[in-house]
Image 1 (cartoon, rainbow, N blue to C red):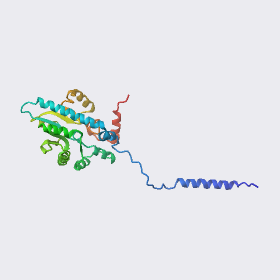
Image 2 (cartoon, rainbow, N blue to C red; image 1 turned 30 degrees about the vertical axis):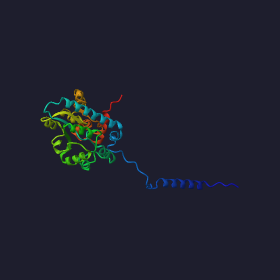
Image 3 (cartoon, helix red, strand yellow; image 1 turned 120 degrees about the vertical axis):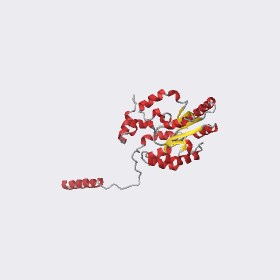
Image 4 (cartoon, rainbow, N blue to C red; image 1 turned 120 degrees about the horizontal axis):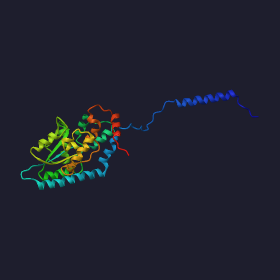
Length: 278
């Protein structure tokens, strides 16, 4: 004979089931060795630019192209050289002669922003590489008895490490008299003028418009574009530009050259506000 459980018994079982389920849900989470996703790096937005510089053949091709053109312009300058005229090349260092992609990658991997202390630490390691084609071009110019001046906004106190790094890479004319580092200002025009008193500067090389003329210094983005257009005939002739999408005055101009405090959120919003959609 089939019997039926009392209603009170069924209700008791249901309550016990609900209690057990609740306890399971409230158990403390057990720690595991499974990897935990890292938060997005503060410099994540520069990843593609760093990868382009470090890994793409196209970046190397652009660098070789720039120095091939520089060699062509050097040959032309030598043909036009006047008697007793002293020819000179003025060149920037970082991302023009020296590749600091590893420093940029380190900032991404450690989720840090640039600081003077971090940069000084990087300089002291003397691990910057040469930009493709840079050493061979300057060696060619040196063989033609052309003076080379390295005008950089690295600090004077980092000169020793910079020179050691460049000697290891085989750059010519690595003597303290050939280096004009940042002093009172990052505007390079006074340093250009000091060389021009004695030499005919037939070529400037750089990755930043400030490497070519002081007129570009701390100009707003729209003015930098306008001035570039007005001087378009100089580019590829006396101005040889190397690509650098990782940092520079082109980006600093978006934030007003940090004349006021700018938070990361403000910079994020500013970058996106400048995108031109269709």
